[in-house]
Image 1 (tube, helix red, strand yellow):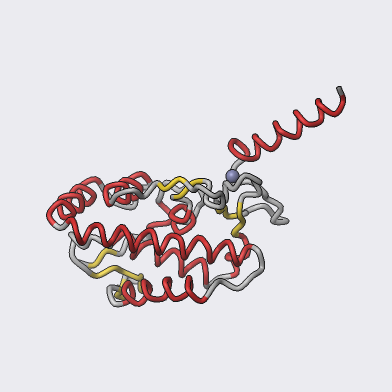
Image 2: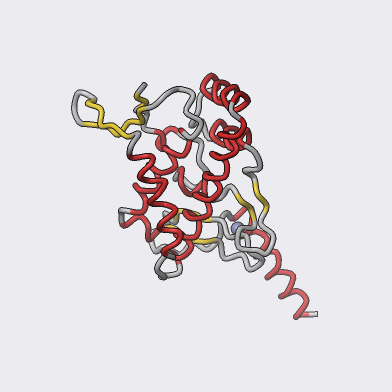
Length: 209
Ligand SMILES: [Zn+2]
C-alpha cells in the first residue's frame, strides 16, 4: 500500500506544522517536571486521530495490531518519545541561535533512514508526491509523517520562524511565528500570553499601592 495524502494542509494543527504539534506533546517542556502526554501507544494514536492524521478505521486497525504485538507497540512508543525529544531540542537550539547537539541529530537521522526506506515517489499526473509504502498495520507509520514534516521544516528558511514560548516557568511550547517582524513571544495569547499580561497588571497595581 502506498499512502500519498498531503497531510499538513488538511490537519487540525495548533502550530500549523505537524512536527511542531508533535514536539508539543509534552507540556511544561522546559520545566523540571514536564507532563508527558504520550504515556501509551494508544495515546500516540489518539494524538494522530485528534489532528486527523489517521482516519478512524486506520486508528482502530493500529490499536488492534498493538494489542496483538504489545512488545513492538511499546518499542514504537519509546522510539516516538525519543524522536519527539530530539526534534524538540533541535528546534529549541535553532531558535536560540545554537547548533543542535550531535546526539539529537543522530537520533533524528537514524529515524530518518528508517522512514526513507519506506518512502516512494508516486506520479500524480503532474508531478511526483512523496508516499509512504508499507502495510496498513505498520505500527510506526505515524513517525513517517512526523519525519516528513520535520525534514520539510528543517530544510527551509521557515525554520527561522520557529519560536519557544517565553513563559518563565518553563511552558516551552514551540510555535510558528507568522508575524511580519517575527515578534511573537508566547505559545498563545489565551494561555501563557494572558498569564504574563495578568502578572504584569498585578505587579503594576501592587507597585502603585
Ligand atoms: Zn506557553
